Image (cartoon, rainbow, N blue to C red; front, side):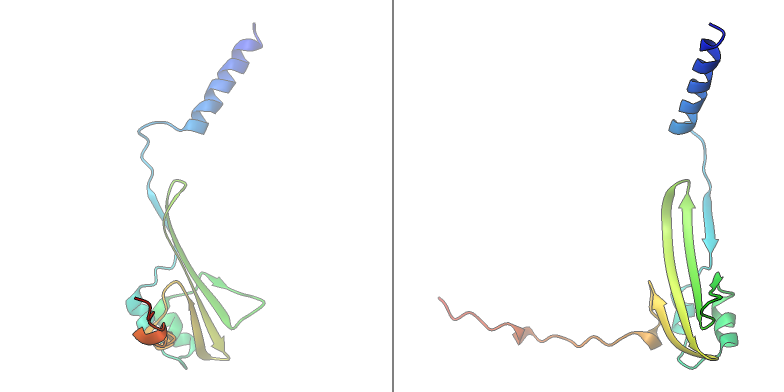
Length: 127
C-alpha cells in the first residue's frame, strides 16, 4: 500500500502535464528578425553589406562556412502553435548584394513571369 499510493500520485501528476491545465494563459513568443515588405522593397542589387544590415538589421544566422550568406528567420508561437513563420536569405558576392530568396521577394529581385495568352489552347471545332 505504501508503494501504490506514491505511484498513483506520480501517475496523476504526470497526466496533468500531458493534458495541460485548463485556463492557463500562454503568451505569444516572437523570435528572430521581423522583416517587412517595405524593408525588402528598399533592397537593390549591388548594395553593400553595411547598407543591407542598416535596412534589415543584424542577421539571425551568419553562416561560418559561407560568409556570403545571411539568413533572417522569424517565428511567432503560442505554446506549440505556430502563428507566423518566415525565412529570408540574402546572398552577397564579396561586398555586393546579388540575390534575395525567401517567402517574400523584394521588388528588385522578382522574376518576371511571361503572361500567357488566351489562345494557348486550340479551340475545339466539334459541335
